[in-house]
Image (tube, rainbow, N blue to C red; front, side):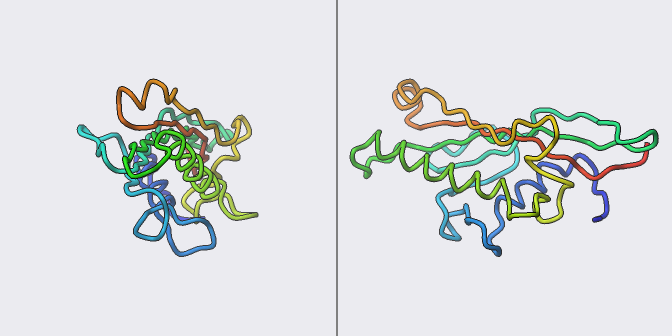
Length: 168
């Protein structure tokens, strides 16, 4: 078991996993051949409006009791996806929605991780596998609204991760 690095590092650990480009899973960053230009921890004051972006947030955290002397921190990760509408794609809206669908599919493959190892490279006890977890959940914002108002498509991905147990 890796050394416990504390709950404050959970978002950074998940970002590192999503940026990984040295395994058999899909690479996500465009620098490595993937569809996402930016994968970062937390929502910035001024988000990049012209980049395909994943912002990793921790929307909840609970200390689940694993035994009388041990707790297992469990986090809900929320990924905010921003997919700008690019004028070069035709047909414009339909092509961009398909491109976002394709990019989300690659993201979900990386979140699920390799067969028999759901630890995200040993960063967590398990990810997307928590007993109360519904698995990976994707919600797409209404494109009729976001295309006109924000010139982008948006989606939210959420899933749980169990951290390594600590003594209480």
